[in-house]
Image 1 (spheres, rainbow, N blue to C red):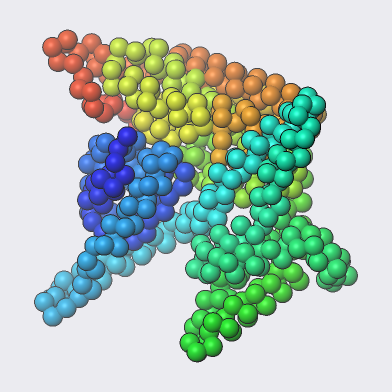
Image 2 (cartoon, helix red, strand yellow; image 1 turned 60 degrees about the vertical axis):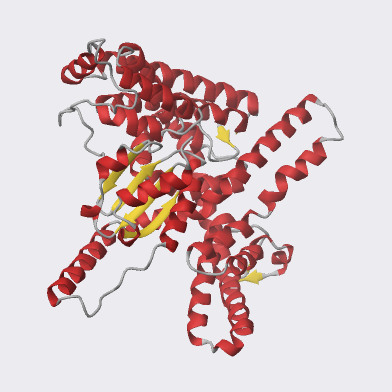
Length: 502
């Protein structure tokens, strides 16, 4: 396992040092680095770094795939290295007018480049509110699943209430944690965001009437808590600017909770409640009526969403559905995209097993893929080869169609937690007809996605030019074997590549 601190230092060197880093964020598998000068980034060196599964540059934004666990440690160490680096001088007597003008032009160009990704940055910011909650959602979901099985079997009756409390405690206070994270992400104090989010689940809400409507505890759910936490951050930041330091400790938090809490109680809960119900109704209607077709479309387009990072926009939707109905019907359908990619990777492995570089890459990425982490296969195998990415999407589409068909037949397939996919989602299933039907529906979709992805890739997944390159590498003389750390070296023509890869 790569040393996190050493890897952080190598990444820092490859991106042009701390002075070239404008921002660092991470999700469960990727490190996102916003750079001031893309020209200063040594992308080939970054891609060749041990521990980096893939590195993709899109303007000033770098997406560095490290994998779960490691990405968290590297993000912390990278921030520590940035903080310990001496601050670069903003100017000085030694700088000539030409140098200052060039520096200003660079900053302006960087700002313009970053503004082009405003939507993506907003999506990442919203997603970052929910990503820290995923481990607890998975843990509580698994405990709830175990408790459900024990309850249905009638085993250990004294234990099931105990497990029920363990699984439901976090979910009952989910709005508080969402409010805390929302305030933190938008520059406020987390505990004040939590205080505003806690209003939503407070029992006393049932005694409040707004515009003739009596509110209900939990109304608005995580969307209301998120909006309230963001609002609290903005109110707090404004109050800190206008409040004298001598009374800030008393005035700022009081006004923040009073203003943001009142707006949350008076407006946001009602509005977010309507939106939450609409999301649940739309998702249920889509799969109940669109069925196989809706599942086909959703399953087929999920890998491109993952590739571009747009899948993060679905995180609050999944969380809202879980908070509202107990499970999200979208995740099992979307998970079929990863299953189709596993089928495609297995086909490539079987067809070109003598190509040591490709085989080694697939062997390293498959375990993560089977556990629901698809980026290593996307960036290391299917996307660089072009067509396999498309055939993987085809496999995902057919698998999604099968899961959607079960929804249309009245046996909805849902997931009681997010953050898991593929085989790791099996213990987290539930639906309108119980775990058994959900397991059958999801398992059938997995098998279809594996098989279709495999067959489509075997028959249509490799062009003549790419096949020639891969076979040439496979037939390398025994005296000149492929180096153990050699990267996959295939020339993909524009006709073979996927144009959306940015």
